[in-house]
Image (tube, rainbow, N blue to C red):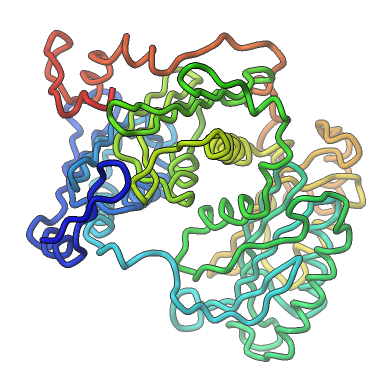
Length: 503
């Protein structure tokens, strides 16, 4: 075995040894339903590799499972974690088929070799240009293949309507799509097929080039209204990349975090700690160095919500930080997360610039997931131009789409979700406007599934929040947390030295 010291006391192991170690020590997943009355406990032990935590969390969140508590440790090349999960209604997971799927999926993910990742070594790139990028990628097998389009750039009212209208005019049928907006930026992934034939991906290179040219003109229509990152996209990853991870990557590459207030920079303390302002309910994020243990420690305190852990772990992983220890706890409406990290080269965050960059990206990743506005659901039969017609109606009535999720079933029905705000003010939508839209589209077709989002529920209230120290919180409650995670048998038991080290 060849061991080379990299950075500050962190060892790099020969890949051949890692492969042998993984084959000799296959991952082990244990799921317990009897230990706790309020959650299902999932324990995973496997050989460690960069990104494994993200893939594990991705499996759980894709099943709409809520992670209420978690502990992760991956020192000495071994990955050990414990998750407390419930379903979307707060109940334990009792379906045997679901439990079997979770176990098999986690074991498969943990068994993958380090070189088997989500990046495509040679994606089939059709064309790229400033303002938008269109890439051909096959999804699935047989007839269920589509052409994938990635778009990112400055957002404006009516942009989504123009994009769908352009696709409709070129006989492209949208089969699925996901569009996020944040801080005046937009990122979207749109999967289309050829409406002129029996479906399937678009094969005509001239038509693909024409689609690219037209969409780039749409995206660049208001290019220059904002400076940093206007009209840029990141490089394309293959369709094997998780869609929500890809949206995070595009938004981050388009610098949707660059518009944060200068107050975000905080102040430097004795521990070179930086904190976001707590005013207006922004997430409280701190980054400091734990010199005696050779880690940088990231603490997050914010309003809790689904997929929060995925968003923070995704950001750390894509910024090439390795997570060695983590403790996650949800209490009421709030979530507390603590990560002990190093860069993949073994170094901690040494400069103020590095720490501020990480803080800004974490805050943006947390905030961009919150949909703004009123949720509308469109349920009907699919047809070419449906999304173009619907979004035109929204735009004509003065609504701005802040989030969209489009899906089409094999039976030809659609279940589309839109979050909308008033385009002029950005405020809540007048319900009389919504009723007028429903009258135009059809009462049975468009449904209101939630009231306008309350700012207090999203942590955007103007009341100041008290200063919070996550390190002090875990120090005071470490034994209770370890007990609740099932890592010790009683509250009076002393936690083991190895598992308590990260606290």
